[in-house]
Length: 78
Image: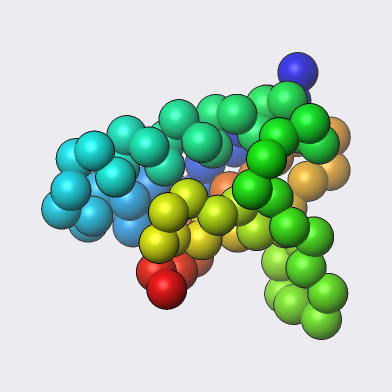
């Protein structure tokens, strides 16, 4: 099982999401990254600053993986 490392700025971005259900879903999905690479909704990125993207509804959570998961402070809504 992998460790999840939340960057403080990433947590602040999630706190700004007004819908509580969406925030909870993002936290739940990111916690599933503890079992990375055996999780759904993850895409390896090419030609991008970050290595991976997790899709959570309308949101994209970017992260790096080097034995533990590092959630990057950039949450993108499509």
